[in-house]
Length: 148
Image 1 (cartoon, rainbow, N blue to C red):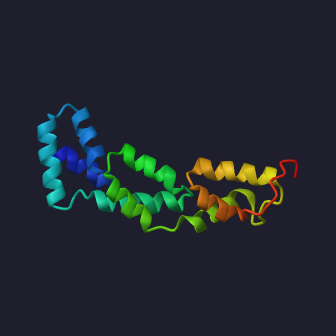
Image 2: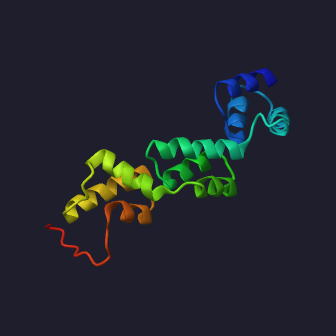
Image 3: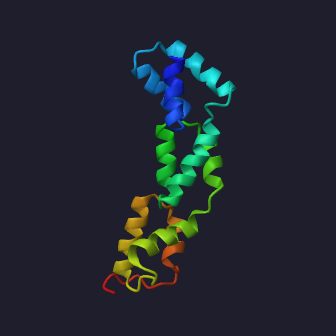
């Protein structure tokens, strides 16, 4: 089982929960899997904080927002404090602006309908409401006339 875990880690980094599921899915006893994971963590071959930081950096560079990244990391079984620490190291407002510009061009949306369309795109990508408002140049004093 150590060889199987080492072979998996040689290909890419894994979160400890993700590696646990993979090894348990191959028929290994959960207590044995826990022991191997503890050994690998002690040797720093498996590090959830390092994994979370790399995951956030990779997905943020691909245009994903903190809401989506947080959800994905929770699904991988990472603790909330590691997730928040990794997300706190990245400023997502400029990344939201870059994602909007990549998809829709450099000029900000002029009409409410276009702002709504771009906001839905950024929301789908996982950006927070504050990041979306920042990227769209939304001013609370804007008139919200849906016909424009």
